[in-house]
Structure formats: C-alpha cells, structure tokens
Length: 472
Image (cartoon, rainbow, N blue to C red):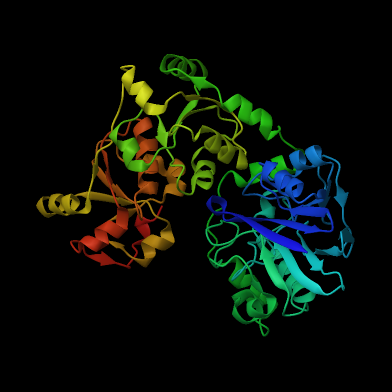
C-alpha cells in the first residue's frame, strides 16, 4: 500500500496518490498532471480513478486532463452534476484499487456534493480519510462558498448540513484513522487551519474546536460562520471551470510560452490591451520596471493574489519573469484559471532596459528613514495587511486598507497625498503600490520589510485599538 500526499505550498493544497498492486487513484489533482502520470509509470501502475472531493473553488483541478491522458474514470459524490462524463457515486459506494478500497462518504456542508473517501486496507480496516474541505486539521470547511453558486443555500443552512455530516459520518470512525485534508494553513477555504497537514482523527476530536463532543448545533453554526473573511473573487469562476470543463493545460502552456523581443512585447501590449504582470521579487521590481506593469512576486502566495487582484479571469496577460521561470509562472496562473497568457519578455527586464525602452521606479525606504521622516512632520501611513493583522497590532494613526479590498476602495485614496505603504514583510505592499501606480497614483512610497521591520526598529508606538472608521 502506498499513500502519498503531494502538497503545494503556494495554494496550501494537498493532492493524494494511492497505489496498490499495480493500480492507482489520484484525489484532488492539480492541473499539471504529468507528475502523477510519471509517478504511476515509474511504479508500473495504472491510474484507475481520479476522485474529486467536491467542485473546488480555490484552484482548477486536473481531473479532465488526467482522465483524458490515462483513461482513468472521474468520480464525484452525490449531487454533483458535471458537464462531462463522470461516475456520480452513491453514499457508501466502494472503489477498488488493487487490494485497497476507497469508500465514498457523502458529507454535505462545505458544498452539497462534498464527499470524503475512506481508505480501507486489504483486511477492510479503516486506515485513512481523504476529507477534502469537510474536515481540516484544526478546522472545518467554510460553509459560505456554495451559496455563491446556488441561491437557495445560506451559510447557516450549509453549516447545519456540515454539523450533521461531521457528527453522523466522520466522528464515529475509529480514532486511529489518519485524516488527509485538501488544505492546510494559508488556504482561504477555512479560517483556523493548522500548519500540520495530517493528523489522527482521535487527535482532531480532542483539539479541533468544531468537533467538541458537547457542542450543540446552534453553537457549531455560530462558531463556523463567525469571522469569515470575504472569499477571493475568483472562487466562483474556478468552481464554474471545474463543473463545465476547461482548455487543456498543454494548450495554455503552448500559447503562453511565446518569447517576445522588447519591440514585439511592446507592440503586443499596445495592440491587445494585455495586462503586464511582473513576477520578480518586490525590491527588484521597485528598482526598475515597465511602466504600467503590476508586481505579484512568484515567490509568495502568487496564485491566490493573482485571483484576488486581477478581476477578469479571461484577461490577456503578458509576463515579465526572471529568466527560465516562465513555464512555472504560466502553470501557476493556470492553476487558478488564468489561461490567457499570450507571451513573455524574452531575457526578462534586462532586455527591455538594454533596448533603451522607458522604465519606471517605485521609491522604497527602510523603517529607520520612515521614522526620521515621521519625526519631522505628520505623515500618512497605509497598512495593507488583513483586518485581523491590523487589529492585533498596528502603528498608531496608520490607516488600514487591506490589499484584498483595494479594487473596491481605490477611490478612498487621495492622488494628491503622499502615503507610506507597508504590509507584514514587503510582498503585499509592492502589489498594492504597483497597482495604484499603474492607475496614476504617483505619490505612494513603499516601506521595505513591512511591519516586522518597523516593529524591530523600536521607533514607533503601536496599538491594538481599532477605530471603526479606519477599516474599509
């Protein structure tokens, strides 16, 4: 028996490869499916099933390409109605993989089709639970996403279903069962996930707030629906792609990997209206970039921030990348449904600069200089962290405009004022400043190192008092 978790940090997502006696199954695969195919080939195994725990919102799954390339059957749980051929499992239906069995357990709540898969070993003993977004380590799936898809659902109604699913289907399982969730800390699909990516069900019964034995349904509904941040705007669009189907990632990669000279890149930008996305590190970008480009660094929570900040999932995109990282960037865009990359700048920004093309820069200062400036005169500081981060501790008099609501609140920022912008470490503030720069806001100054550097400097008073009017 082989069970392997394939964890992707930037999405905080866990896919699973299960193999026994020359047969394999893949659960919740990412869109780039070659690694699963190569893994099976290396072991002389045939991928028999692609099992989906639900229609994912935070990424585009690889079920279609994996099925087409291997002949594996796609499996969903009850209530699923995909626009392609798939097995719609009944509650309790079993699927054989060599000497192993995967048993579908319908667990509505996160979504109505949500289904866990219970792994039974060759003796029929429960060994593992692939819990999707029903049960995480330290948390359960948020119950507000499916209401965006079906108007007759509310988060309270979904939480009601989730309570019953957990109590009647999951908690009666043996404590020794290992929980293999679809996500870990950092995912927007829950609010209190642990950094651990597996645990025993017994430990979760002791430590997961949502599995308290004496918890009433009313308490559960209140706790799981309190404190939910608004989901990223791209979530419903990814759900639709997972239900309706999508273009093969092979075609997406082929189209995106068009190497363009500076002249061709400039012409494409002018002719198509494509967004120029620069994925280099924040401070590298600040030192020089193509005018009107925006920065979302590849070495951060790249895909979720792309999904949050680029409103149109069909937006044509031109890339500026570190050399030899173009395929990685295109792949990671495709993971969240941004399939319309039309080319990249050959040899990167250095080629643009060498060609004598126009460049722009963003002023970025350290915490000591910020302190020196603020000692001489009143300044306007924008804290672009999440509300919860700001509420925990922030600079006195700093205004909070979270990055994830920038598009809705841009008008609140005065183009004629100078703002000093910081986040936690410098990644999000550069996204914030670059987006506004591309829209004509020229007096924003980035604070490198973010709140950590500011606090470490010891030169600023901080507070956890929140004035309601400062939170947009």
